[in-house]
Length: 105
Figure (cartoon, one colour):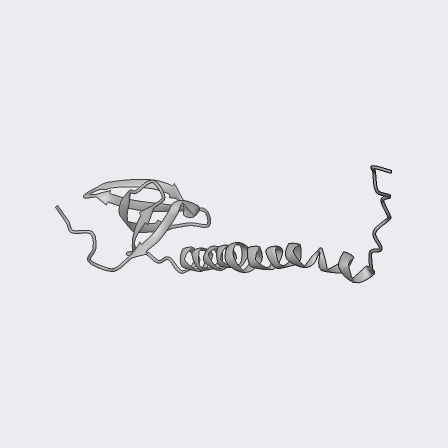
């Protein structure tokens, strides 16, 4: 006979379980390398926005630098130049700058 007989492989329950180990490891790495740092950064952003006060210097997500002149629940008034005030949403604030960063012209 030219073709040899094929026999069914005898599998064990242990080999089925170990096939999921790489997938579990990938999910754990995904959590610790992507999800957790992103949640930490979002928490820091929320805390920074909640701690804003009148007189703080900030930069918006669009790159506008300004000094906070008025704060309400959802809107911040920024003085971007002498006597020029714009209103932005609180969530548009990207970062708080150190005092004296913005030099008067």
